[in-house]
Image 1 (cartoon, rainbow, N blue to C red):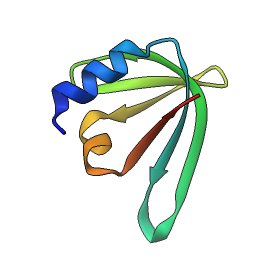
Image 2: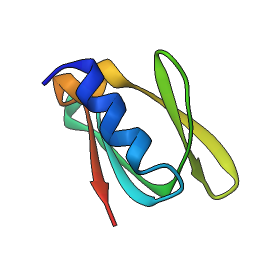
Image 3: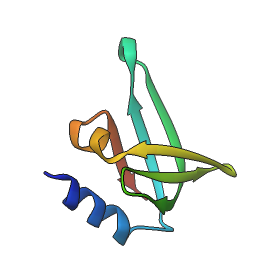
Image 4: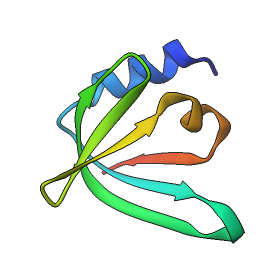
Length: 70
């Protein structure tokens, strides 16, 4: 998987509801549900309860961020 594939997949699903899982330090997992809002060259944003959360495409590739389309 490369960054262009990730960007293409996310761009096809703008304004779609998603569940984002972020795997952090000490086995902590943060989960967010929202709508894919905007795309930028190095990151994309998800609108969660009126607040924008940003995520990096590279983290999707490495598995630190997982996207599930709802």
